[in-house]
Length: 395
Image (cartoon, rainbow, N blue to C red):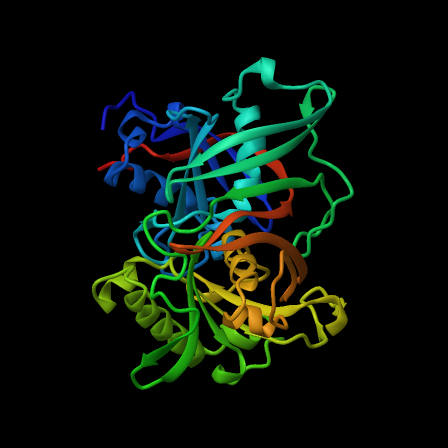
């Protein structure tokens, strides 16, 4: 190394919370030249920024928070597409393994992309109102979909503080509506097997009824009772049970194979971000992780979902889109657990509380489609400046 070269390089970055997740946000132009294009150099940089791979699974030497919700990165740039403002690329960084999963989106961090784009100067100033709502038109690069992020503006600045409460987030903030436009898989059916319910055979584990859906993010839904659960479980009930986690991973891998997302079970090991696996049940009262009681009458359905091999502390935003989409199609396991029939919204209970999501589904000659899924989130800048990584990061 050049004796005059500093031992670390500085990369402009912004640390943001979006929904119940947080991650490190970058303007594409601010990345070191080797990392401005997809590939090994970019992955090495993001792994080092977040502090992975870490055999201790703590990410002490990086910006990650040692959970799937906090081991995330975002790269944004001015959009290359007409009628869009921003191109948004999401990288889910593995905690203990040396890879970045680019196979899906983060719905929670989607809410933060709008405010970040304004903060980073990616939106023309003449678009920014003095007071009102600015709709940031985002092209989600990972999945090739449009997201509309409705950002509140007060006195010419993004309004970050407010009274909107989101279960899973300690403090209230300003509400941001996020619209996932045509969230189903554009290359195939919303239900990749062509069925609303399938038999999923998992050797040495069992055979389960499952709903496979590509909406928001590829997701496998199974009845809680079939797995031996109530649907009221919290993180410790699942994440402290290594045999249960192994069973879920086996089900997820076989489901991914049936959905056509992978060609061999081994591929699932390097595709941790997708598909998600979730289990559903009819409403029951339970004590949320914050100690607040969720009454059965407050919700239409209970849903618990795993992300990166662990039960999520609340709900992934993309999985919430999948829940809304599946709930609005009569006959899916999600719809049946929510009482059946036609719906345009559903309120579900998750480990941290409740969330209402909406979707409008319709049946066409090509099968079921969802025009738009809607949910409310919030976002806030936590820190801005530079992240530092060793100068030999690309070696």
